[in-house]
Image (cartoon, rainbow, N blue to C red; front, side, top):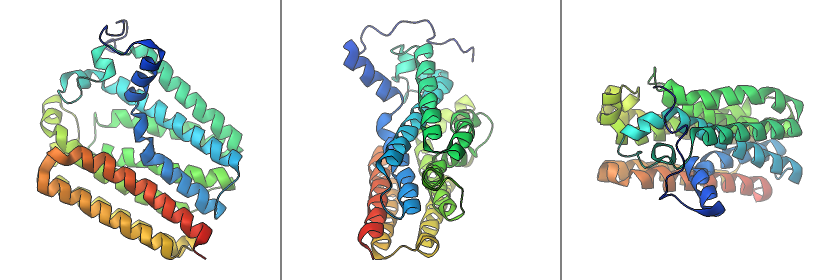
Length: 303
């Protein structure tokens, strides 16, 4: 990789035009809609720490921090993977391989996102500010782990697992072990669906030398690993009522999460990779938002 692809090329003539079109291109570059995966778990950390709704200032800065972190991480990922994306038929239409966005623009987007995270972290409390660079190192470093280890799926899980931990610290100003249980649930949840998603690129990853668990183990064992990860997710989530004093409404949310994860694996089992996008985005988006809402409902009205 020579690090120059797309660096000096102008946006493609066929790309979106006008200011709104450029904004839409940047949002697609960083898959802004996928913020729905991590943000609800950050908010779960917030409401669990506050035992309900926190002050509006705290809530606002947590959202700013999450948007900044997600934007920076995805921009780095797109820069790191741009040459692989150009070779992969599934990803060749992304903005960087097509020249719709310059590398310098993506780098500026990453820097802006991480700057937003740092600002928000310091506005929350000193510990958040001190820990923010470590969070940036994890979420930015993930993109390079697939070059040398099949454990990259767990590193991605760790990146999103920081969300509930950060949400808790944003409210309390200190670390604690109970939100780590939720963090572990998120880690295994993300690792499991990332293994499923990597099945779509199994053959390409093998040809390109990308380290992924499906490329190493094949389809069958990878499906078993994904199921084991999601079983661990449900086990960790089942512990939360004990360590964080949650009740019946939360348990209803847990049952919903269990049903959604079961449905996700049934989709892949019955329909193969053709339904993978449904399993990846719709099911997991509903799971994260739904579990947050049931948790909040339990804290506000479950007593």
